Length: 80
Image (tube, rainbow, N blue to C red; front, side, top):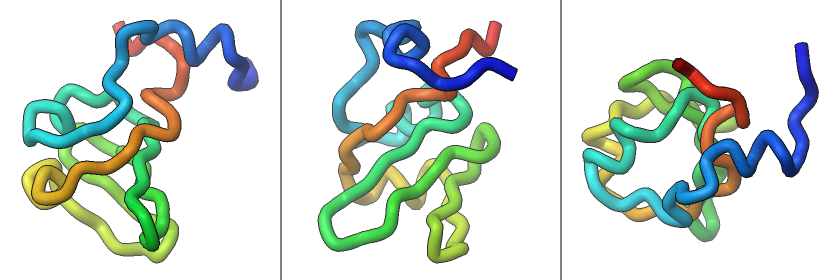
């Protein structure tokens, strides 16, 4: 298993800095990490599921209600 590096992050050079719409959340690759002020980060664990470190689980539709800053977009590896 390769480790994460800045080169891996650049695999998605044009990734959004913020996820806002349902489409944004649906298109985010697995292992994307997002956060909003005063809340725990959330990670995309399946194609329609996000989990926070507080162990709550949300769908893409639920996530799309509030914009979140992208901390990491995907795992840094191609899903193709």
